[in-house]
Length: 407
Picture 1 (tube, helix red, strand yellow):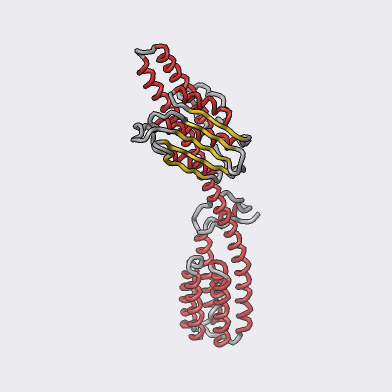
Picture 2 (picture 1 turned 90 degrees about the vertical axis):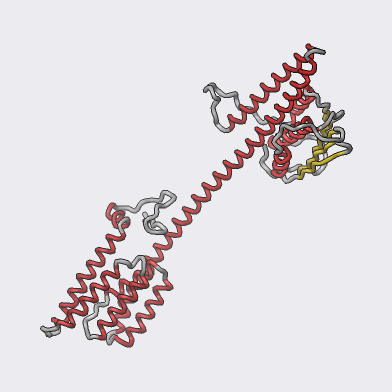
């Protein structure tokens, strides 16, 4: 099982990766400063032993300077090794200078520090940095060391070890980074899907509420006007207000049920039903007629089978008629024309309202925005504007093979 390596020290990974096998391996991997401290201490012990034994082994029993210089150098190099992960170039420079000064002063210079610094460059920087340092080391050794070939061979061993460990470390780091990137992309896609669903629900709620409120306001105005002249028709209008309100509540509960919400009193929700399509258009038009809008519908061709496209057409007609009910001044005729025979399919809602300022609106002004958004999902176009003397027309064209996921 490979050991997961974080991209940067001390930062938690965004994804769960397999842990390395063995408690000791996990312990050393999670305590880099302890590892470096023990390495520096071990190097200091070896350097001190090297500084004392080398002069004495040559038969010189009074080598105070030859012992003191390498001892100081061992201390400086050991302190530098504490930072080999963070500043490997600085560590390589310090240890290299210590080794060179020791050699120039005829003091015994051990080769282990240079090898450790070279290894750190390969592992914690890059192979390019490591080979540059190896080249500098080889060139300097050819000028200053009599047994330079043996020294270069030792540095080559350190370099090859560094290449192996460094490549493995960078490869695992790249895998970890890619896993984190995929996790971030997954979360972003989930957030985008959530936002898209909220936008869809918002459009649905706007259509339901706008239609219901507009129809109920018109019915209430008519009922008030007929209360004295024709009480029977006034009562029928009031009953129609109740029917429209109940239907709207059912639709809103359907939308909230799609979000998984519970009703306020904890009761069971209404069973989920498909969103309204073309089959529900006659009932929709009837509700507008009851509110006083003289609307008729003309259909040509075979309707599309896509449920989402049917729902989009239903909502577009609903919003267009709601706008006509709000804004058209005394319309005598409102036509809903659906043509499914050609390419693209077309939908037109036209009224012949009189010229002049429109009726006062209770809307939010986002109806046309919602229509354009629905049509855009299917790669279609919307043209909305004045038609005739005071009238208004909404024309929608949608490719027969819808490209979106509407409704």
